[in-house]
Amino acid sequence: MKKIAIVIILILASCAAPKECCGQDKKIDFKRIFKFGTVYGAVNGGTSLSDVDAFSVTNGLETTTIETPYDYSMILGIRKMKQFGYQPKEAFKRGTESSFSDAATIGRWENQFEFLFEAEYKRQQGETYFDQHHFIRYVADDGCGLKNCWNHWIAKVEYLKDGFADIEYFEASERYRYNVNGNLSFNIGIAQRLSEPYGYDPLEEWKLSNGNLHYTFLALEEGYTVEFDGEGGVEYFDPSGNTVATSTEVWEAVVIPTTLADYSEKKRDALANVIQHSWVIGFDYYKYTKKSWLHAWGSLMPLHYSDSKNEFSYYNFNEGQWKDYSFGLIYGHWFNKNIGVFVEGKYNKYWNREWHGFSAGINYRVF
Image (tube, rainbow, N blue to C red; front, side, top):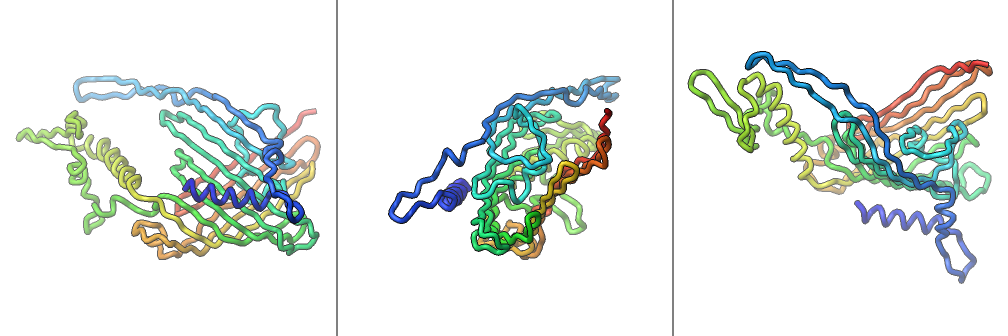
C-alpha cells in the first residue's frame, strides 16, 4: 500500500511541477506546495456515558456499577485546502471541525496541491480507535477557456481508516474533467482501491444446512470448555480456564456473541488485502452568493475488475457486478436578514458498507 502511494505521489508532483524552458532543470516548488498550509495539534475531552447500575439475583441481590471512562481525543495533522465561501473563518484549528466539503471531488484551488494528513487517537464510549484520514488532490486547468481542454484532469490519492464506522481502504483515482460552465462539471476515469476482502463472512463455514450456526462447536474449537455436574448444572470456561457462564442462557446471550465477534475479526485480519480497479464517473456543482449557496458532488463506480486471485475478494463474491457510490450536499439560504435554513450531509457506500453524516436546521438572527 505504501509503495503504491509513494509512486502516485511522485507522479502527481512531477505533473504539478512548474515547467521550465527546454534545457533547464525542472524542480518541484515545495514552498509553493506548502504555502498557506496549517499544521495543528490538539487534545480534546468530555464526559462519556453516565454510570449504569446492573442488578443480579443469582446469589442474592447484587448491584454492580458499570462505568464508562471519559471520552478524549489527541489529534495531529497538516492541511492545505482553500475554504469555500460558505465555510466560517476560524482563528485556530482544533481538529474537531467537521466539514463535509472535505469529501468533495474538486477543491477551490486549481493547478495547486491540496492535501490533508490527519491522525487521531481517541476513546469514544469506552472504545479506543486510531483513526486516520490522508489525501492529496490536484486539479489541473490549462486556462484555455474551452469546455473540453485536454489539460482538465483530477488526480487524488486517499487513505481512510474510521474505526467507529469499521472501514479502512486506500484509493487512487485519475479522472478527466469536462466543464459545462463555471459552476458544473462532469468527470470520468479510473480508480484503484486496496482494502481487506470485504464481503467475506468467516461464519459461513459454520452454518448448518438449516441456516443455523453451530456456535458451541466453534467456541470449543476456539478453546472454550464445558463441564456438566451430572445433576443438570453446567459451567463454561474460557481458553484461560476462567468461568464465564454457569447457565446456558448466559452462555448464549453474553459469551457467544463476543466469541463470534472475536473469531470474525481474527479471521479477517489474517487475510491479505486485495486491490480492485473500477471505472468511476462523477459530477461537481458549486455556486455561492452571500445570500444562497449550493455545493453538490457525487461519484459512481459501476464496473469493476480485480487482478487478484484471492478467493475471498469482494469481486469474486459478486462476480464483478455491484455499484459503489458516494455523494454530498451542502445548501444554505437566507430568506431575509433574519431567517435562514441549511442542509448538509454526505453518504458513502463501498462494498455494501455504509458510513454517512448529516446536519439540517434553521437560524434566526435577532436584531
